[in-house]
Structures are given as structure tokens and as C-alpha cells.
Length: 229
Image (cartoon, rainbow, N blue to C red; front, top):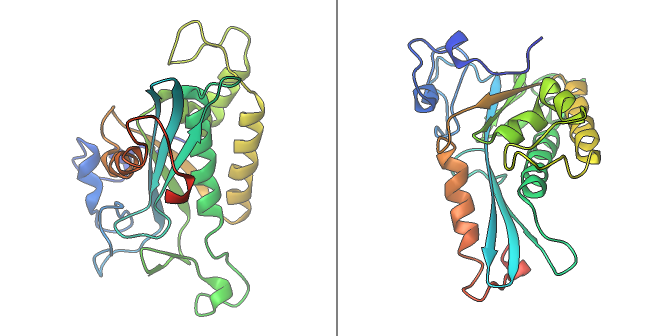
């Protein structure tokens, strides 16, 4: 089974990512706080964004996961480099991808008590998520899309693979692939299929807005206050 989300298979007259804000039947875009009463929420869509930032002599990785407006799972992430280890594009994208998978896995898990019991419910956007079957990760980075797909990870493990960030750049740390596969397997054990929605650059606007807010937490001297997370 393919792990690539094909919006045209679900969304009539699909042309761009914003067309998925509301679809009769099953899909609800994270921009909408609640689905229309005729909709069944069977998927959660998480938008992801990541960026390497160079300020003065310091370098940072900044990223974000966006679950929806006002959702308490929306989060930004910071990684600060030092003289011994520089933050790379690969590193911050891997951190964000794994964090998003882990966050979905930490939703209240199903139990044997049925949808009316706390053990049988998971909540996102204030909606009972007991019927959720898919976690769709919306990304505009080829590298992050590769991390989140089985075929992409297989290609990264092959000799001669090079990064989309630099044609001469090899995979920095193969253990990232193992860690991400563990998170995907965890979601599968909860009955959740992981799909990747690879959009054009700039179409992860929701997560980018969260990330832009995180950039303001780093001042002009390149200092970052961890207490602001």
C-alpha cells in the first residue's frame, strides 16, 4: 500500500493544497477548527516546516508542527549548534519529522471501552478522534518527505544517495531512519496509517507561521532563550 497521500483521489476538482479545507465525507484540513456536521473525521492532517538559520557565529535549527488553530499540540522547536557541532538542514528536518510522529502517537489511545469511554477516545481540535484511521503529514521538503515514506528511506540507505539540500551531501546519520520507522510502527500498532502529503514549496503556510514566531525568539545577537519554548 502506498504511503503517499493522493489528494485527487479524495478531493473533487483538487488543484492546490487549500482546496482541502473542507471535503464532504472524510477529510478536514487543519485550518478548520471543527468539521461540518455531515463530515466524519477519519484523518488528522499535520503541517510541518523546518529551517536552518545562521545568525552571527551561531547556527540554529527551527521547526514547527501545526495541528490546527489554537491546538495545544502546535509547537515550535529549536536546536542550537556550537563550535563542535553545526546544526544541519538534515538534522532539523529529521527532528521535526520524528517530533510530529511522536506527537500523534501521544494522543489518547484506543482501548476496549468503546468510543464513549476515555480509553476509547483520542481528541484533536476538540473532536472525538476515535474514528481516525490516517495521519497525513503535509510537507514541502523533499528530504522530509523521504524520511516519512518507506521508499524514501530505502533510497537514503543506498550507496550513492545524495541530499536534496546539496548534491554532494550524504545521509548524516542512518539512525534517524530507524527512529522514524519505530514511530511509524507505533502509529500502525494504534491502527493509524501514515501518509505523506508532499506539496509545493510554500504550501505549508500554517506550520511556517508557527515557525516564524519561533524565529522572533532568537534575538539579533543570535542568542536564544530556551525558556521561551
